[in-house]
Image (cartoon, rainbow, N blue to C red; front, side):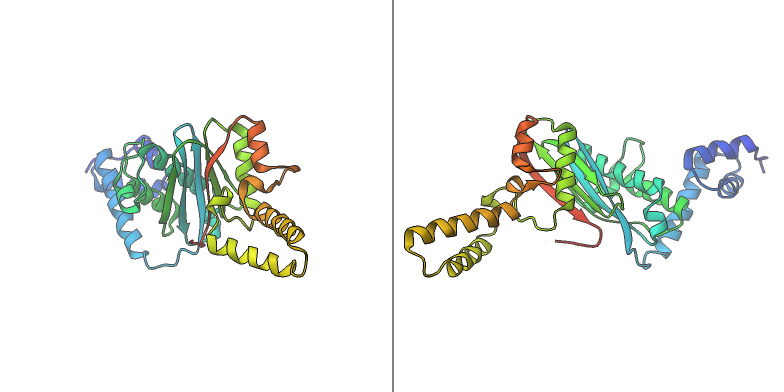
Length: 271
């Protein structure tokens, strides 16, 4: 049996960020062969991860990425809030979102088998992370938008937003993502995106409220009410949260771009 030096253990730990004892045990089992020790560790933690697969992953974080190639979000779940808020988990979630943009893969199972910039697959990366965090990790969903991207994730990590634009949105794009994150009611980017049934119901309510007025006045009242209704629910018409004297659309135009698409994720909220 080869003698395992402290230098070998430290070198393996630097590559895996795992506990010293885990690294030493793997090196002993691999008779000092680092590559074999890595495989032993991954298999060991993959087996343990499978054993814990039934544990509830009620906590988690939204990983985000926005750049010239596009924008993406992933929902990565874990067991406890302690892990969900640590920097390692945060970095992992964001790196998965970046890989989603650059790989173009949005099917979760295919995504797990794809290789990241590190040379490891997503699944291998999750197994490595399990070895460090000792919690069940579950990649729930991911989405990608084409265009110049911007992103934002709320300080608690549970709400994330992305937009794409016709030109690079810069810091202004992040500001719009912050607006979306803070807005509870959002039915579409523009009026045409809003469900026609909801529009019809809103118009009918407006007509009922204006009932009894002469027709020319009634029509003006209804259109005024509908403008207000859209202004509360359509992204580009909403008052911008950081400056309510202008709409989100006006803010984007002042900064040289037009919003083309947006999405919002919240941990545990699907649909």
